[in-house]
Length: 106
Image 1: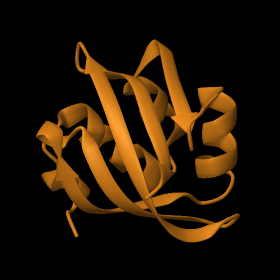
Image 2: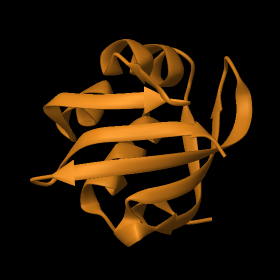
Image 3: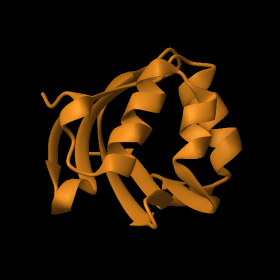
Image 4: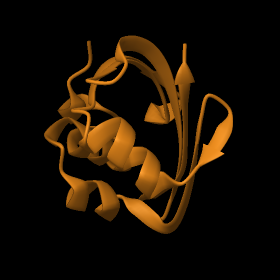
C-alpha cells in the first residue's frame, strides 16, 4: 500500500486526498476547467460521475502501486454502491492539474 502523501505526482496526490476526504472543493481544485474522464471505457460527465461514485457513496482509494511517474495507479476502490474492487486509474496532468482521468476494473 502507498500512502496518498507518498504518491509521486502532486496533482494525483491531491486527487486521491480529496477523494478519501470526501472534499468536493479540493477535488474540483485539482481538475482543469474542461476535465474529461472515462469509466470502463465510456466517457462520463465528471461532475455527475464524481457525485454518484465518490461523494454520495463514500468513495475511498487505497493505492496498491503506481507507475509512469505516478500517473498510473492500481487501486482498491470502495464505495457504498459497489463495495470494493481492484481498479486502474490513468491521469493526464497539464499545468499541475488533472485534465483527464480514466478508471476501470483491473
